[in-house]
Image 1 (cartoon, rainbow, N blue to C red):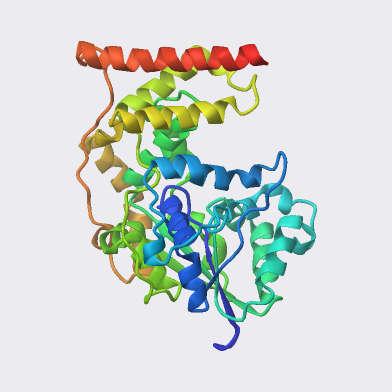
Image 2 (cartoon, one colour):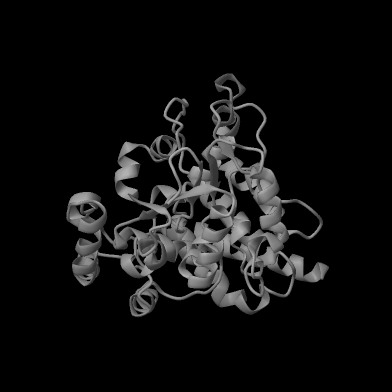
Length: 374
């Protein structure tokens, strides 16, 4: 472990569906204020023709802007670098494969140049890095990269109650128009694959005494104020921040129904035109927001199935929680009562059925139009 006076890198890696979008939006907005107290938010994704890593800037101007990201000069937020704050591009698999040193990858070489002249703390946030954290060789490459630069590496990872976490992952999976899988089948799949077992998820940093690994309860952070809690963890306790609307909300039971209907009707066509899947994703989010669908969020669990999932994870959750927090998992996360909320055309009103069908039809026309353009 490095001595206390050495440089510190706070590396936040999510995982997905633990508020990363909101944290990254806050980092973009508060980068200047953090810089004034010596905390450097690392530069964002490089830009260039055809470069996927340039997308965060477009998303900030479009998608995140539509969800109420407030950029207030009066609070000192000033002009915002739209790429800064989201470093998920660093977790791209091609940066790691076939490389002995991360600095041989252009993305990581650029990061090395960006942080070289900063003597104070550096902040990096990218949920795609989580996949690399799980891979023993890639994890080792990340740790070596920072230790060679005399950084103490402080990893920040969040955990959630599995009921809410699995539900959020499912909604995101459908939102991204990747498959029309039903919730019950999806649940069986992730349980079988052990995707949400805490000890397995974080095995590499838990076993590594070269790093400081800070596990954060998502539920506790939400109660404290997610962005405020994160600022405090990276040395930004003095930075003022106004809480705002969540950046990437559940797009509602109707949104899930529409996305699955589009996939059932047009799924085979979505990869026929470049960018079509992403364009549909953003358009459906716009519609869901405009129609207020997020006010009735999708929930695939009922109380019985939620209890079954909590029972399944109880032993491993409690062992992990007592190790990391000194308390039982239910004491840390609490127990949220849930009620299944899925759109059912049979019980919906005529207006609701018409609203949903109009959206499916409109997205179908959008697909046809994009395919016609080639």
